Amino acid sequence: TSEENATYTGQVNTIETRHLWQVDPSTQLLFGADNRVEIGSSSYTSTSNFGPFSTQFPNQTQTNTGMYMAATNLNEVLSWTAGGRVDFYRNKNVPTVTLSLFRDVPGADAIARLSYRTGHREPSLFERFDGFSGDPTLSAEESNSYQASVEKKIGDVSVKAAYFLHEIRNRIDYNFTTSKYENIPGLTTSKGY
Image (cartoon, rainbow, N blue to C red; front, side):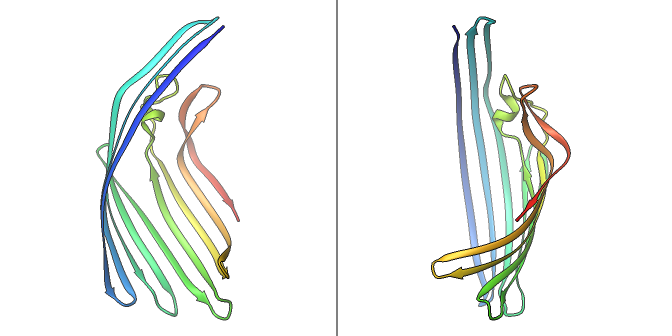
């Protein structure tokens, strides 16, 4: 006979401020900042024919503070949105960007869009500190995403055709052989439509 007891307690507190400024009828700027604090703890105990096992991580905290800005310009030839964000996490400054170009497709009542963005994901407290599967040395994931799409609205329904390419460097994944979270070295790619 075996018995297991697992508890994870977590809390995420976020505060954000953002301001939208309409520069002129076709241009707007968005400015903002946010702060995210994640607090968590975990414990696990089991008894089985293999003997007792126990692990825990006491309260851990990680904080992320970010500032961002985006600009949008709408015009008949080519509209665009461009933005940037800087996150301050674990004594690092991490910049990310986004760019999107779009326009109406004449005679089709549709919108064509090209977009590019970079991304950054820090490991969660559980991925870093869980006593059984965590790894406190995990690196952040970094990504590049590309997408080309055409979207058409038919009544109340939108139909979208898209091609995407998503590249992740240092992807965080669970390894079922080692029972640990780990970074997958190199580049992981997904693409499709």
